[in-house]
Amino acid sequence: MDILKVLKNELKNKKMAIVLLVLIQLVSVCVNSLIPILSGNFLNLLITGINKDGIIKYSGLIIIIGILGTVLAYLYELASVKAKNNVSFKINKYVIDYIQKIPIRRFEEYNPVYLNQRVNSDSAVVGGFFFDNILMAIVNGLQLLLIFIIIANMKMTVLYIILSCIFVYSIVYRIVFKSLYVYGKRYKEEQNIFFNSMNENYELSREIRAHSLYENISIKLVESYRRFFDSLFKYTKVSALFMSLDSLVSLIFQAIIFLYGGFQVIDGKLSIGEFSIMSIFFSSTIAIIKYFFQWGKEYQEYKVSVDRINKLLLIEQDKNGTVIIDEINKIQVKLSGKYINIDRNGIYVVRGANGSGKTTLIYRIIGLLYSENIVKINDKNISDIDIYELRRKVDIMLQNERVPNISVEGYLNLDFESVERIMNEFCFDELICLKDIWHKNILEMSDGERQFVVYIKTIMGKNEILILDEPSSDMSVESINLLMRSLNVLKHEKKIILITHNKRLYEMADSIIDC
Image (cartoon, rainbow, N blue to C red; front, side, top):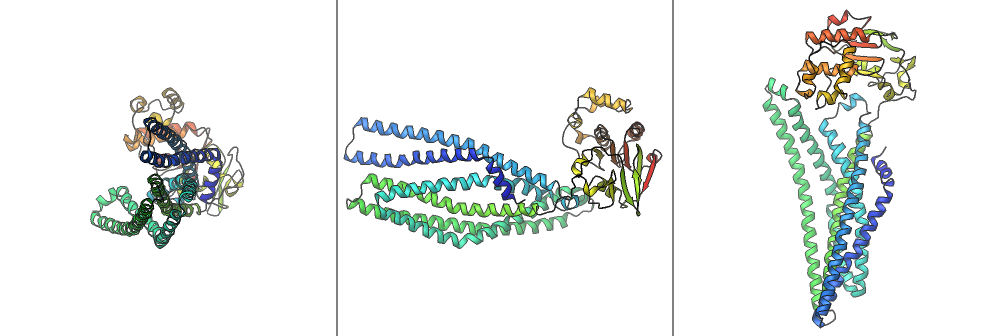
């Protein structure tokens, strides 16, 4: 789905909030438009004569209007932030959910920094653009119309000057419009490449040290930074040119207003108060015009973000069937032209040399890799099965599985007594004292300890299918003994698919699958 369709759907859900925001802003515009008029009339009265009561009256009115405007601005900010962040989060979640379902091999092609930019930065730009720009554009457009009406009733010549100003601004913007988009897009892409290079330095720090690749990495980083800075500088030049021309046009037309208004006041055709009103409204008009052309710049950045997200959403997701499997009774895997059946409780050891396809095999079983006519579940081709529901019926421990930065307690997500009871069921009574590591950060543990905790987490699942990929790789001899003891208990109630190079575990196999 195009990300703009997602945005449209989310905005439909926020219709009442949007209407409320527009109403608040319209009232605010009308209220704030009273201040220049009151100020102008006050100046005229000061010149022609006004008593102290009149001064107090006008001062009180301005205070009341100021308080009302402040309250409206406060309410708008609260409502806007709430609506904008809700929409941005929904878009963010949609993108995350989508990329989580693209084929694992395609997913692994992308650098985490690249994906993070799209999920966080670009999603925020797309989600916030309506509230920060489109909604405000509507309100500013209505405010501009109101100013035109007020000024036209005072002096049509001033209106013509303002319209001429808008025309000149349009020409200036048209000159830099395309360049802003092209250089803006290039700058963002080069920024991503540079951040990817930085991230690579952290991820490969061990290899860099081991092979003394400092110089090579440094050269690569410098080159990446050079391209990033070059794109940034070119974008800055175009942006600065636009802003400079913007300021120049504003000053020229401000001078024209002063010349015209000053001569009108001298000739007695315009009062000081009226001149003040026109000057203030002209300044407001300039601010609105600048907003609209800045809006154009923001739109280009928004368009870049939309294009970048849509590029991700064009990646085809995992092929997924519609058949729901209630219970996995039989798994059939095609190897060397014939199907191997996994249809009884017990331990099925998958063995083979490195690179023989053992991990690929389990990826196919759970649908992480497309496997037409290679894997069948309950005599149904896996391509016909809902793989997301299928995975919920499998407990799996991946090789070198990554863990979150939390305590053992938080990772296992059960109270101590419940975990201890489960462990005793699996003959873990001799396990290293769980109480000693219960509140310890799992990332601070040794590889063997962490591996065993991950194993405990996996077997706590209630599913009949248990898949273990090299579970003993970092375990101590004591932990491997406990692992084997628990597997002997589990094999009577589960179908266990075990990938291992540990020949001790081969002895436990009820069946051996050679890859």
